[in-house]
Length: 386
Image 1 (cartoon, rainbow, N blue to C red):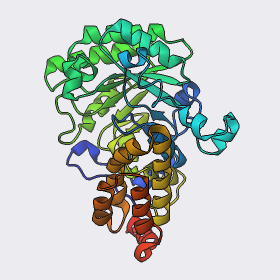
Image 2 (image 1 turned 120 degrees about the vertical axis):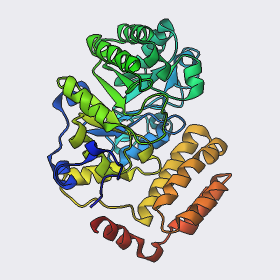
Image 3 (image 1 turned 90 degrees about the horizontal axis):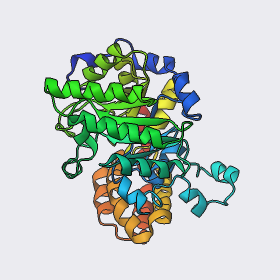
Image 4 (image 1 turned 30 degrees about the vertical axis):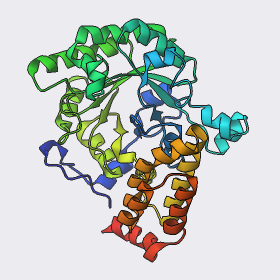
């Protein structure tokens, strides 16, 4: 059975077997009422530089019920750039499908339900950008007040606002006022800007204001902004939030690397759903495995054939979205992650890094993925039962 990632934090001790937790888990009906189709308590996070339409569609084909775009800058949206093109949830369906909604869904090109995530500096521009997203068939508008990247914070965006609660609340209000009432708004946060009592109080102000303004839920990453991605996240922060605000829909994020981690976080912290971020890069099977576990079945690692199919799908979709040369460059970072599943992972990774064009990609996939390497399918199943 898949085991939760071992991190030395007392509150991560799961009191009962993970498979029992998984079998007992169900999505909170409040979530499904707000976002029909969001039918399992996990989803793919917005990942800067990764979670474009190609990655999202591959994740959905493997059981992901809900996705968030990478953060879209309000000014770029307003000026007609990224967000009007690459992040449009219906673009690939229009480009690759028949144009008929039913046929596109049957072909696996249905990028819904989805949240368009927006990030910016000024309330009026955030309002304008959010209103634009609301016209682009997003089921949810998500506000990013969490990004810890230094260049984002220096421009007074993302996680910067957790140190400035008055400004953060102004952003939240402007977006909620600009988005039609039938479209839920949500917010992405980190547990504080830093570990000082002052910043903990600032977080509480922003967190509570979001719900008072009518936000459906907050997704809280269990690291601080200053911590970035260094060291383990503090799941105890999510436990404390759940205990203090047990009537609110709350999503958790941080240190989710395998399907078992999803159920460990649900059980230990009491959050309503889990955001899967870096753990799903090159690993769309995490969603299939989570659904298998919920159904009481043995989760299975991907066979060589399944890895090949996912790589080909991802690359072809990426080419449709970005063109051959940009896709060939972008897919290197995905190839590195996909290679982790291969029994000859280091060799495969080295060859993916050198890919320059579609022919290079197809040659690597043909060389390493066209045959079941040393009975890898049997090895994968055995590894999950030990």
